[in-house]
Image (tube, rainbow, N blue to C red; front, side):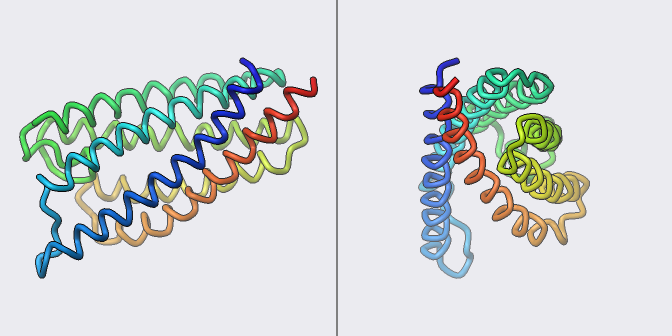
Length: 215
């Protein structure tokens, strides 16, 4: 893989962060305009959120594919399996998001976004949980890459991701088990931590691409 491709992956991380922030403001605005109920009209906002999720997952797949290219360029292949597992699970989540947005029964589509009890919804929730587990696996591998090449940045990326994804795993696990009382608080903490991991990840790819170009 070329250094330019890896650098593009790093830049796309920051585009992704911007997209997530814009979506958050859109959701907040939709809730504010929903009145006392505080629930946005799915017909007005649901399709936009589904499209955003599709773009988000597609970009994440590209970012992790370029991350694999960076690691391999420096002879580190222990992350290949967790990265490929993560890419496959993200692709599954992408398909589930498309199917959910294409008109799956309302009682079954909830877990694609965190709720519901139908078969489709349960499978979607399990897919999300498995993705978080694979992300934890990648976090450990990223720390290993940092240790091998002597990069404190990639060690930090591994640690930050590990903290954020572990919290996300606990939160999603509680949600899936029906014990969602503390889920909101846990995910509220996990969100900024993972966002910090994204920032470091993007910087790591851009710096890594520079190092690849020198070799």
